[in-house]
Image 1 (cartoon, rainbow, N blue to C red):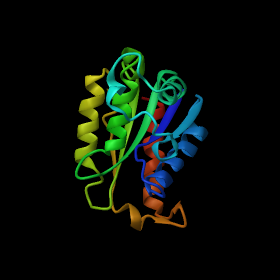
Image 2: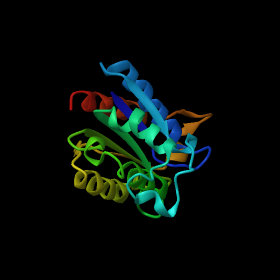
Image 3: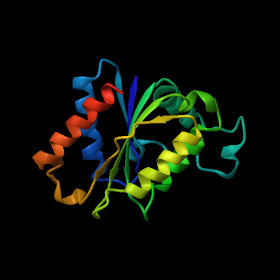
Length: 179
């Protein structure tokens, strides 16, 4: 199973449009079940001081972990740039699912990274940061990371309007399917 993760909890975010398009491409090209997890659509009842202690994981996180993380053998993570790195919501989510069944989450699983940004670097630093976190957890990160810059200029009416970006996204998915 492949899980596509939209790594922001900001409502009405542009990364959702990108993540949704990758999800649809994977449905077309992957010979695998594909699921979509958007951090703006999940409950946030699991953020409390004792969340890092064994046995204190919120049931909502355990359900997300079982369905979208532990069950997956591949991930496609879309990470928008926040302050030159990944979103706090994405890091917190990774930390929250790491309390239980640590080795079943990302270890030996293949991951594609896509960075999105309003600026011109497409969250390159954030993808580096996320690569280090995931490799520390034992994941295998696909070397061909995809930065998508000036995201607001590529989207119109919740659709990607730039043909070059659409073509690049499709090629990235095809590389990932064979990874």
